[in-house]
Length: 133
Image (cartoon, rainbow, N blue to C red; front, side, top):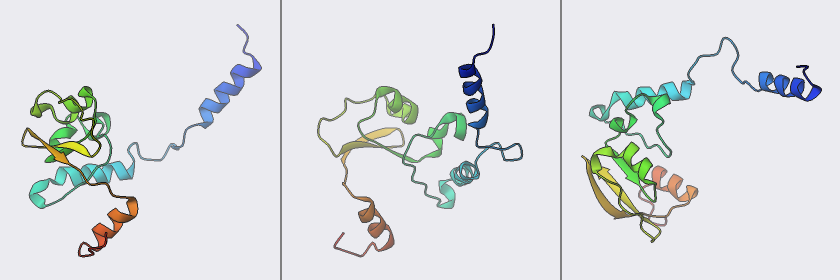
């Protein structure tokens, strides 16, 4: 079967879509640093806040075991089972915004969360004594 001009363009685009050259490391330095921080552990008073999903293919077979506290809000049952398997079945999501669950030591505790903008978070982290934020 003859290759059309369109097939050739798709093939060329697929070959040029890679961003990693031959000499680049297989794992991103950022992922390596995150992995090192997580494996240092809570015993060394290392605290990592991850806003996202710890993917097993990147962080290893059991990434949920690397986190002492997991905060989940309005997640699917499959996400609950992946990130908080010891806490039992996933509760029904609350219809009220600002509600979530804090999971520690295999126990889920329903909690109310605080809404903060990015600027509020930066102020809170850099100047915790600021009562205006």
